[in-house]
Amino acid sequence: MARGEQLGRQWKILQTLIASRIGKSAAELAEEIQCHPRTVYRDLEALQIAGFPVYTRKEEGKKLWSLIDTFKTQIPIPLNLTELLALYFSRNMLSVLKNTVFYDSLVSLFQKVKTTLPPDYINYLEQFEKSLIVGQKPYKQHGDYQEIINAVNQAIADQHYLEITYYTMSRNQKTRRRVAPYKMWFLDGAFYIIGFCRLRKEVRLFALDRIKAFDLTDEPFDVSENFSVEDFMKSSFGVFHGDPQKVKIHFDPDTAGYIKEKIWHETQKIHDQKDGSIIFEVDVAGTDEIKFWIMQWGSSATVIEPEPLRQKVLSEADAMVSCYTKGS
Figure 1: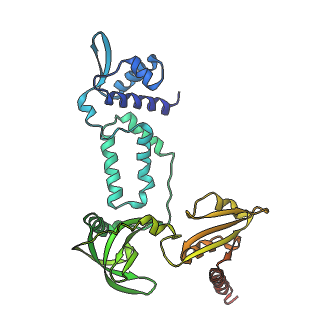
Figure 2 (figure 1 turned 180 degrees about the vertical axis):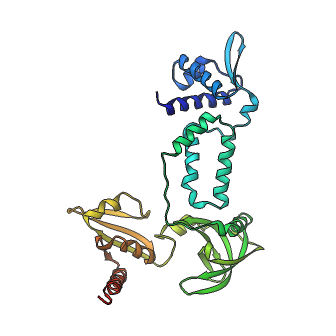
């Protein structure tokens, strides 16, 4: 019998006993987890040996199995084994957020869960962890932004304006702005604020690591009932915004399979061609980010429309050729 199957069954027994007010008989447990009563007895004995406070008592001639009440109160949330594994793995999946309140809180939560488990179960989880490696690149070191992350969270919760000094990379310029932070957004290893900018008089996106100074204010703000963060971001191919554009790209047969196996944008449509190639169609707000995405596929991708985007890619390609042929 697989070790994981045995532990999963034993964890179900524990959850059943935790939820039971008076306890359960072996027959009731067997019916609950759909196995033979003899298997239940073996599992109950294994749980006792492992250190779980399982005990029996007789009530009206019936032998009932229960957990000591003090142990029940130590279980912070009713997780099954699969959910516990998912929580354990999520530490690695969110390792890109190290040194932020989000990652630290997750680690703290799991430490509390671990205090309820005997060493045998902890060892099992640690062995399971070795089977999964999560790689996330590129990413930023977020430890330096802990203070601003906390301030933004507080401003969002209180619905108070932030006064920020913001560095715009494209203009190499700093400006002082008062921003109503609606949401914090995490994408491609970086944090952003989605909020109303009083300077520009519209909802804007601000990269947290480009905020050079900030102050929490006492000025409250209200989010318009008509504003939806999901609607605001759905047309963007990444984080930048611009005029709405319909983009069509031809991908050759060798690359088509890679494009088809992922959702790149929620508006995407893929049209199969007879030779195995595809036409990738998408509606985006601005073309700067999708231009760089197209270029990463090299000669396998060709812009069909719009023509201005096609010319931008062509200009970039010519500039690259020029860089590589200088002095040749």
